[in-house]
Image (cartoon, rainbow, N blue to C red; front, side, top):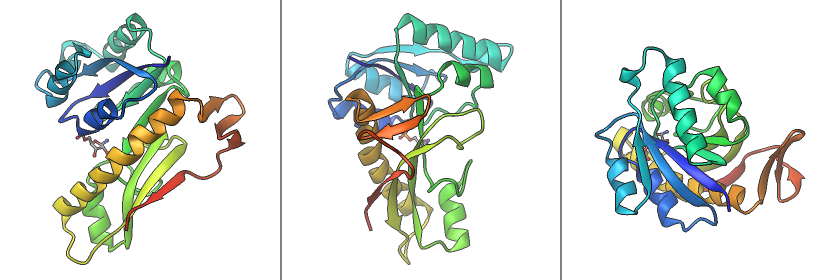
Length: 209
Ligand code: GRF
């Protein structure tokens, strides 16, 4: 069975969705860089091990990432899921988890990497918005996209309503992709990503207009 660690910094609604999904893998631990993250409470309520690794206690990003890496090794983790983890990871750490670490981002990547995605969508007047599950690479929000949740921007949408609607999609697609990895439907190989035995050329799309 695939062993999963989830890395968080905040409320952890995606962690909750992953825990509620009864994955065929096992969430063996949750790491937070913030001691007050509500996500830790969620993990404890579900009897999942937690570790607080505070970035501010480490002199460099490399030392911080090394501490996280050691915790992941101690838990014997196969898959790392970033769920609202708000730290930039070092290239060395990312390389050690190449093909084994995924993230969810609140935009239809490759557009709107980085922060404030809902605001940027509204400013541009885009008709569509959504979220993307992707592999993590050293470049921020740039790894191969595995799945996207797409919604139509409504005339009355503001940042809050968009954030809420995107969250609903996140809670749908993130557990789904995690389950595909757990049950071998989606596999990372040297030759590329296979989905249902075929090369994945486009992210799998979920639409909720
Ligand atoms: C989500 O919007 C996700 O797209 C982004 O961070 C947020 C985490 O929310 N990476 P939560 O902590 O899972 O509620």
